[in-house]
Image 1 (cartoon, one colour):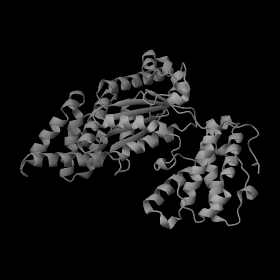
Image 2 (cartoon, rainbow, N blue to C red):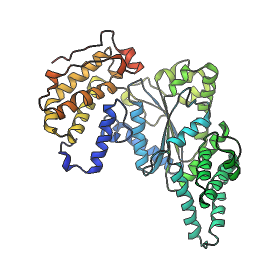
Image 3 (spheres, rainbow, N blue to C red):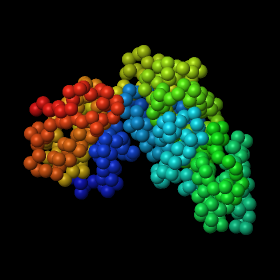
Image 4 (cartoon, rainbow, N blue to C red):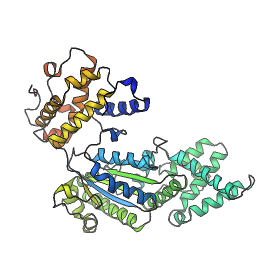
Length: 443
C-alpha cells in the first residue's frame, strides 16, 4: 500500500479508503472497496473471473461458499460482487433469516433481491432506473429499426412482447406490470407508477387501484417469483448489464428453524440449483454461504439427499489443492500469520489517509500489530478464526485513531486491550474465555 500523504491521493481513492476504514471502525464488513483489503484471494481470481465471463455470455453458475464463522464469507462474497459489478453485472446481497427472509418463501427472497439490487451507477434499490433504462433501450432499438415518432409507442410494445415472450410463458403478469408502469409514468401518475413498480419488485399490499390500473391481481407467490427473476434477467441484459450476481448469505440459519420449514427451504434450494443448471436463468451467478456444519451436518444439506448430491465436493485433500471451479468453495479461515498480514494491510491503508502517517506507521509497527492480533486471539480463547472482526475494530478505533489524533499517545504505554461481552457477537462470546474481560497486552 502507498504511504503517500492525503493531498497526493485522488478524491475517489480517499473516499474508498474512508468507506473501508469507517466500516472496520464499526466492526462491520465494508460494503465496497474490498479489493483494497483482499489478501490471499488471488488463487480464486482466475476461475471465478472465467465463471463471470461465462455468465456474461449467457450461461449461469451456482456456487456454494463454505467457511467457519469468522473465515470471511461475507467479505469474500462482497469482494466477488465488486468484481462482478466492475464488469457490468448488477448485484444483490440477501440475508437469509427465519423471520425476515425465509428461504422457502422465494417470493420474499425475490423481494429482498429487488430491494438490495445495485449497479455500478445506482445504489439500492436500482430497480426503477434499470426499468427506465430498459424502456429507453427499447425506444432506441425501435428508432434504429425505422420507427417514426408517431409509431414509436406501438413499436416499443411489439419489442416488449417479443423480448419477454419466454418470460410470459411462466409469468405473464411481469410484462403486464411493466406496461402498467410505463403507462402510468407517461401520464405523469407518479404514485401509480411507484406502486406498480413496487408490485413488480414483489412488494405485498400494493393498493388495489394501482394493481387494477396496471391490469394485475393479487400478490407475487413462490412460483411466480422464479418467473419474475427470469424477467428481471431479461430486462437487465437488454438494458446493457452483463448479468446478475446474487448472494444468499447465512443460509446455515436453516438449521435453527422448525423441521417442516427447514425441509421446505432445503427443497427450495434444490429447486433453485436445478433451475440454474437447466439454463432457465441465463445471466445469473447465484452464490450461497454457509458453515461446514450446514453442508455436512444432519440438520442441513445432508437432510435432503438430492441436495447433498448436487453439492458434493471432495475436501479430503490438502486445502492448497482445492478446486475453485467446483460447486463448493472452501475458505480456510484466518491463521495468526494471515491475521497479522491483514492488520498490516489495514495499517498501511489507514496511514495513506492519516494526518500523521509517519507516526501511525512508526508506533503501530508490524511487531505491535502482531502483538495486538495475538492478544485478541487470546481473548477469544485462542480461536484465531473468529478474531478478525474484533481485531480490526480494535486496531482502527482503539489504536490507529488515537495515534493519528494524539501526538503523545503510544499504544505500548497507554493502551491495554479490553474485551467486554457487550461488544461481542454470539460466536465471539462463545469463544471467549471466562477470564477474557480484561486482558493486558504483552509489551
